Image 1 (spheres, helix red, strand yellow):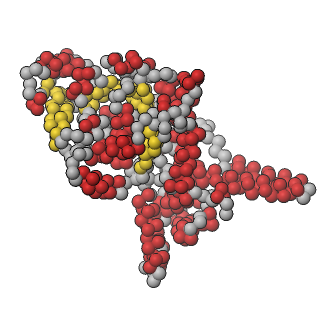
Image 2 (spheres, one colour):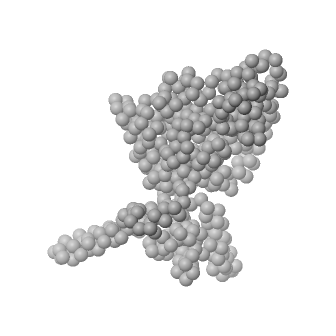
Image 3 (tube, helix red, strand yellow):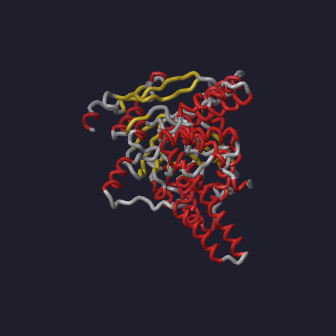
Amino acid sequence: MNQDERLSGALQENILCLLCFDDRAAKMIRGSVTPQLFESSVFREVVGHAIDFLDQYGEAIKDHLPDHLEGILKGEDQRKAKTYSRLLENLYLSKDSVNADYVISQLHKFVRMQTFKAGLLRAVEAVEDGRIDEAEVYMNQAMEKQVAGFEPGLSLSSPEAVASILDFPEEEGFELGIPELDNLGIIPRRKELYMLLAPRGKGKSWFLTHCAKRALLARWCGLVITLEMSERRYAVRVLQAFFSISRRSAEVTVTRLAQDRDGNLDGMIQEVLTRKTLRDDDIRKVLITKAKREFGRRSKFKIKEFPSGSLTLAGLNAYLDGLERFENFIPDVIMIDYPDLMEVDSKNLRLDLSKLIVGIRGIGVKRNAAMIVVSQGNRESETATTVTGAMAAEDISKIATADNVLTYSQTPAEQGLGLARLLVEKARNEESKSSVLITQAYAIGQFCLDSVRLKPQYWNLMEDRSERKQDDPPAARRSRPRRGQEEKD
């Protein structure tokens, strides 16, 4: 069988996983696959059991699979038993992280291609033999099967269709660990583009590191594309974020937010934390142990570096295809740092950048993946008290393309306290224009430690703190809203 006539290794494994554990996906796959599509005899054996069970009981085989393979697992051939045991273990580990919609779409695409190629070959042979009528029949049959795989889209012509809309689940996403955004549903989701707009040097890469951490905690397969920072440096940041490790000093001062009973900001407390550092003598052993424990049982994660100005949309798609074919890796979330550094025509910078952002969102839709990007603000954003979407560098239309846009703002006083503000500049399906105050500690890899919904009295709190700064020792420093201010606001 030629390379283009085979399902990729990643696709085969993911199809098998869905057949065994996903009731909905198994029924969608059943009509398109036979055991003969799979290269491995082990896969073919398991597929056969999964299909037989589905046909008989109308649901995926799930935890009954080991029972059906008991004769092999407990047989005399120990080598064969270990092979099947490893496959079962991999299936159980992957069952909650397979990108079902993308896998099914790729399977249907493969089947349609193979069906059309077979019909075309038979039609060509008939034409060469002068059998024109038969050639037309073969082509019509191939086209009919193509039409059978065609999805016309959602219709509102019947009560059942309207009712189905209400039952349809929201696109799957993962929480950012910032309750004020998570509770509003302003989170990265499949088939959507999530964007952070920030001034130069204000933590855009740290935001993506935070997103990578949260995706891994949610057991999503994550991919970071970096065009600005090396793979090694990004990896160090991910380790810092996961394990709260300091780069240099063992003692790190962080700001904590105190809240009243209603969840409003009540004050700020600075604490001194003691942490491991990347300079400790035993840090190599510590990180190896921690990484093996944490990443060994989570979903796959990769960081890929491309030179600035070299990556195109076509190149990104080719790389993603290569990951699937050669690494059995299909990302659930793709993070790009940052699109402005991809290849664009300098003579048509704004137009090219606009097309690039549209294309990036299209990749998310096509591959059923969440897309997260960061973008740089213009010069005005660097001195603005509050950054807005109008301060996007080069092309403001990228704000219109994204589904959700956050802006990052930080005054010099806030930076000194490890504070920053996130403004929901755009939320396609949720509430926008709300602001969130966060505390940060980049020294230990934390984009967000605490968060609270921003209220007007915050600025009075900052002013009050500035007035008292000279009198309070750093370790005990605490500020509160002015008396009566809460009632006023």
